[in-house]
Amino acid sequence: MPEQFHAKESLRLLFALASRDLRNRYASSYAGVAWNIGVPLLYAIINVVVFSILMSGRMGARYGDVPFSLFYFVPLSLWAFFSDVVIRSTGILREYSYLINKIAFPFWILPLIPIASALLSQGVLLIFIAGLMKYHGLVPASTSGIYILVWLVCILLTVGVAYAISALAVYIPDLSQIVPVGVNILFWLTPILYPSKLVEQGGALWLRSLIMDYNPFFNIVELSRDAIFGTAHISWLALTTTTLVSFLALILGLFVFHKLKPSFADVI
Image 1 (cartoon, rainbow, N blue to C red):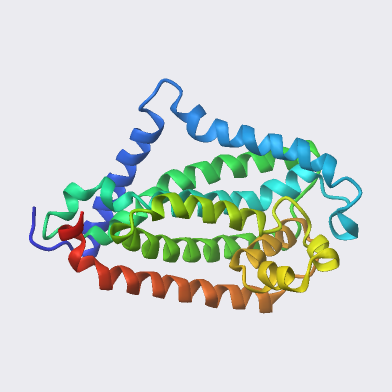
Image 2: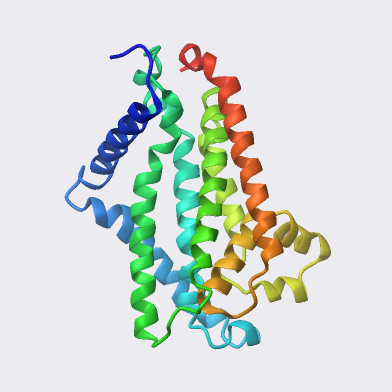
């Protein structure tokens, strides 16, 4: 093993580790794909069945013509990526601890390994969404290309959070239990299963601020729907603000990882 890894070699190593992670995750059992993609998709379909009944007549003029399944699955395609990577980041450095002990190994690539399997799950969801749109006779709005920008913003935010949590989890093992709970709470504080107008009209002021002002995923969810369905004008201010917040999260995450990494080998 060379003493130092250049960027190209590090990326090649990342690709090899991510490929092995995919094989371990999806080919380690007879129904690996079913367990890792099929089961979450089944839970999502159950959510659609239950909440399409609960939200009937409460979607408002903005989403009244959008099938609830698509209303839910479009932002879920971004949320699933975020939650999958962030939750796995709590144990990723311990999972590959045998590599951290190698002095020259570029272990900055380790928090990026779960991205491959998360992208695979996201790809399946996007194919599912395309099938649903065809089934309902809907075509993407002329602004649908903006979904790619929103997707890139989601990746920036996800990677930044993953770097910070993966480093902190080395010193705080309880994060492996705390983070999934926090991610689950954030899911319900984000208008994925319900329209934001319910919060605007009926939520307490503190709850509205928490969901709409301090939740970085609020704009990601709303912008993804606006881009695909064209149900509202794209808020470039919201997109710019969320992009800046995501960049800040990435810089902060890299900073935390860089500051803590010298002692990883001593703690793990």
